[in-house]
Structures are given as structure tokens and as C-alpha cells.
Length: 436
Image 1 (spheres, rainbow, N blue to C red):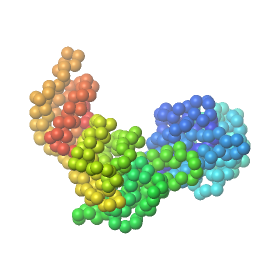
Image 2 (cartoon, rainbow, N blue to C red):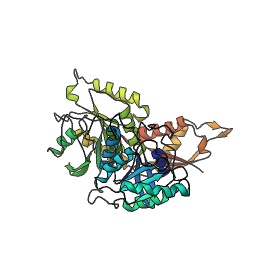
Image 3 (tube, helix red, strand yellow):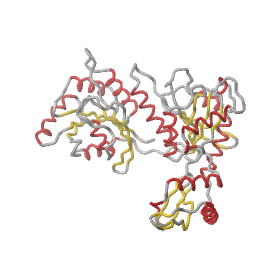
Image 4 (spheres, one colour):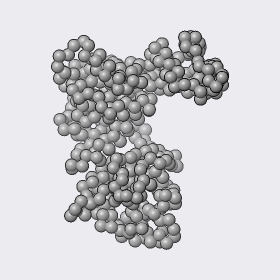
């Protein structure tokens, strides 16, 4: 699993600027007004041979009469729970505040490594002034300038040293992983229990009960699968923003590690933007994808056309993802739950499918006759050669003149024809066009 580094601290100390510096691009909104980071941000960083996730937690002002707001308390607690290393950012220009002391007190009471990052040390005088922050009680302090990047290399060196060692899951890598993802309370744990026929997962009506990623081995029709119940979060207080953000982080982790992603929808609730985002994320990582409409037993007046209506509705929301199979199940009654595994097996086989080069080029010749390539800038576009360069997931490479001129609608035409002829049900296809 990819290690996680969280950036915490009071508002307006430069957390978002440091986040942008660590991930190498401008992603978080940076402004000198406190509290600008309302949404959480996370990205991927690479340093000295290690990949890790970086989380910008944002900041909150203390509420009236409270030295530390619920928001800050929640973000620190969640950073402690979710992170392998915590960067506690303070501001040398304003010095130590009561809020800094309150956050420091929380961080000192846990056993995760904390690096004190004193930001805005843009000159030697400010670097010398940063020693006052030793008063906060942390052994390791790093004066930096997030804007210029000064000192951030030393922080990253220490972060990498503190990350847990890379570990490979023994005896699991050979088995395909099926991750159950979706909004809270759609029945992910119930489905796992039904498939495993035991109470390996805690099932409750309260959204966000699942705390840690649960991997369970399942034997089905002489094949072994690893089932992953996407971890949710237990609510500590009334603050929802942090809970939902870290739930998103955990879902993305599970997607990255899976071979097949099963998006569970509540058949009574429909399909929303969060579901669409999960599908796009799974497609971006080239995972096999299945949509399972759970709680089908609660749908009134079911008939043979109702599932097709659901399919049309969902495909209408994500028109380019109509290759994803949609099934209806009930985790509570056990209705058609084995179909999840049957379709997953099929998708895994499709993901591993390999098309011979001769077959591929015969196919390309045929579709070019069916729909000729366009003329661009007075030149006829031509595809001279095509082959599948990778499977699991499938990647196709096309050699042609002026690939940059190939219209998006023709690329979509090629993909549709590949699916029509070869299948690849539930599997994103990558197509690369290169200059011949």
C-alpha cells in the first residue's frame, strides 16, 4: 500500500504552498486569506526511489471560546489515523500561536513520526529565528521556504527515511483482487459477508463503520480471489468534511491495488457525481470495472425492462463507459451475488486477452475501408501498422503519419470497433498513436 504523508497546521501558514511544492505542480489553491482550503487535496509524490501520497488538510480558525476548533482537532486526529508521517507546518513570520501549541499538544500524544516544518524562512535571519519553535516539543525541525523550495529537499529526505519499508503481500499477488467501492451504506460489507458466508466484516446500518481495508481470500469454482472491502471512516464528531475526504483517499487506494473494481450502487438511491468520479478513477487506472445495483429486493414492481432502464440511465450519465457490465443483486437476500464473481472472472479474462499482430492488422485494414481516415492540412492520414503491446491491462499502439492530427471522434470509432470485434467487456482500452 502506498504510504501517506499529511500536512497539518493552523490556517495561513503555507500548507497548500508546501503541498504544491511536494507534488511538483500547482494543484491546491494558494491565497493569503486564511481558510481558503475548504476542500481537501491529495496527490502523489516521488523522492529517492519512493512513491507516497501527500495530503493537504487545510486549516480552520478556532471557534469562539475554544483554543482549538473542532475542524483542526478533527483534521489532526484523522491525519494521525491515516498517515505514516505528519508534517506540522508553522509560520516563522508570526511566531508561535496558541493554536500552534494546541495542535502540538495533540500531535505529541501519539506515536506517529512528526516533522516540524517552519515555513517562510526566506532569509538567514528568519532561519535563525525559527529555533524558537523548539518550544513546541519536537526533536526534528526543518526551516523551509515553500515558495522558493529552500529546505524542502531536506524535509523529503527525512520523510523517505521515516516511511515504512516497501512490502509485497506474500501469496496474494498471484490472485486477482476484487475491490468493492461506493458511497457509504450501499452494502459493501454486506456483500462481502454474503460471498464469504461468514461475519468477517462488521455490518451495520451506520455509514462509515468499516475502519481498515479488509482483504479476504475466497475460493470460487476452483479459483482464488482476494476480496477488498473499501475502508470507510468512523465519525469522531460532527465535522463531515474530513471524514468524506479521507474516505475518498481510502477508496482511491483500493482502486489502485485492485484488478477489478465493483462499484456498488443502492438501487433505491440512483447514480450521482461521486459514483461517476469513482468510475473515472477506475478507468484512469485501467482497472476492470463492474457496476452492481444492490438492494434490488427493495425495488418495487420489478420487471424484465427495469434493469435495462437503469442501464440506459447510467450509460446516459457516462456515455463513454457503456462497455461496463451492470448487474442487479441483493446482498441481504443473496439474490444473484455469485454473478458478481462470474462477471469478475469474465472481466479478468478480458483484461488478459491478447490479440495477435496479424489479426490486429487485418482488422485495421477492414475498418479503414469501412470509414476512411480524414484529410488534415491537405494530407491523407494513414495508419500503416498496429499491434497490442501489452495485456492486463490492454494497450494498443498504432503507427501512422501525423498522429497529432487524428481527431478524437476517429479514435473513439477505432475503440468502438475494437470492442465490437474483440469484446474487452468491462475493461478500459489504452490506445497510443505514434509517428511512423
